[in-house]
Length: 154
Image 1 (cartoon, rainbow, N blue to C red):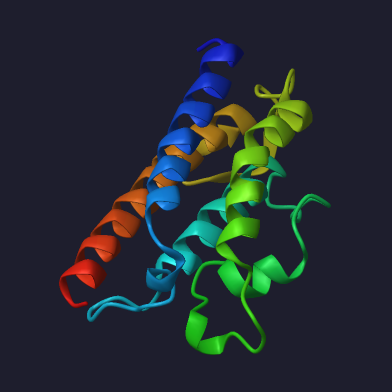
Image 2 (cartoon, helix red, strand yellow):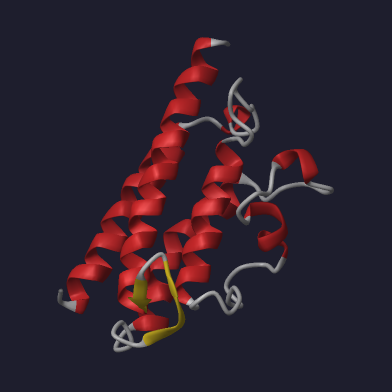
């Protein structure tokens, strides 16, 4: 697959995610619907943080994200454990909008580079970024469901 196609897919999926998040009033972002362990804010931050980890080959998150994002939004974290004010909708949306450009800058020309260790059978940065697109789609679906559930209970 051509590198340009991968970056186009990442950008398209991200635009869909951002468009959805922009339509959801921030008052709904912190509700945790029954049957869920996280909320819309966590899912938005999780998409951002995990894609950043994928783009960096799991080494760390870049200087583009505050270090506390790993504590807030990594796998198996929960808003129930947040000790301080979580990032605002505005901050998360700004970072989500900017991330595609950072990833392109950091990864362009390196998508065939092998990962230090395969992840779920993926061996290159390009494969991992495409998996990130799938991962983002899953969480965008969860955000959509949570929005509907929260709206029905208000």
